[in-house]
Image 1 (cartoon, rainbow, N blue to C red):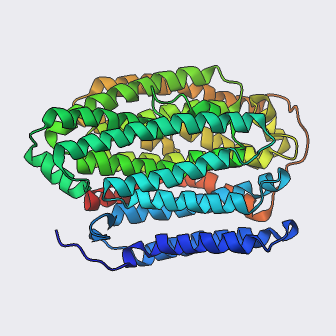
Image 2: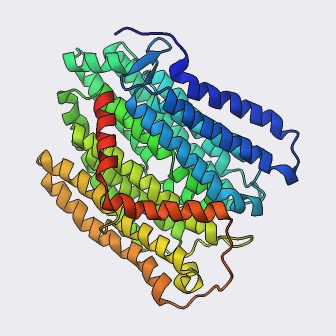
Image 3: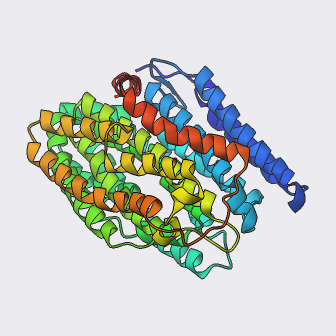
Length: 482
């Protein structure tokens, strides 16, 4: 492999780093009344990063920094989606943050550094690069959860997240060290070649693989490494919960693909990690769906919903095929789209002193605003996998990938628990349309939030009616990169 040393493959990351530092300095001279300047600069930084990612994109993999960083089609697609997702998060969260004293420079710069960490993870071709991006993301998220210092619940969530996240990072790093001990390399492309040819320390390699899968399971929030997810989702400010539940899933999917599909994708190793992922997927579907039924807090319910969705994502990955990987990427894109819309509605209904996070808060929403109730209906239908929304085709694609490798029994389990999970999504629809409203306060939103939320909700329906273009893009991105 011939490595080149131009900086242009990393221009988006370098631009984002420079802008984050500039915003840190500029914010020192901006008063609280003019904090919209910092917000505008942050959105400019993310939009500029997205444009640079698009214009520096390359259909063939390009390596730089001595092979530690790769720019390929999958990286470009995931980085573009990451930037767009963070832009949407900041738009949805603006009014919420302003009402709670979080509309300040710290939130924006932490969001930018977290985005930078995600982008480094997505383009990592070296275990140390991957770990550096992971730690940059994790440290930023810990601080964002604890940003509301006068909230006991947020501080407790941050401590739990920090302790368990540090443990998971240590487990992942230990697994990486064992991969190095077995293969003598930290570079993912060389790791792929050596694992294909076979290594002498096969037992050490498989043992390291166990720690790798455990660390990845935590980052995805899959059972039995899910214990942090409900508490962090409920305890963090809703704007931060939205951030954690959306864009970082692209980075988590990227490291799963880089480590398992690309670095450890040899046939003999696929058989090893496939069974581990199968157990995690089944447990995630069972625990996530059954526990979500008992929740009365919507944020906590969506946390357990996330666990079940990660189970579906793992079904695509464990297939070990290009179509399965493409289905997994398709699923994570759809999941983030649904999460953005769902938490966008929660942020829309929240106001100063009121969080709108209990199920009863959504009673009679159709009488208060039929349009927002319809958007929430589309999002809940999509999460439940009801056609013609895009969630149905996302679940269908990963189930097909599992059936094609002969593991039809897992597909049967997934369908059964998907039907069970439909109950708690449809319960929200019932509350919105058939119950009398508890709160009759007017729903106030700026024009940009209304337009973006409407586009977000309708995209769930449009992509469900025409799912093929996005599916083809995901499969082609994976084929060009793995």
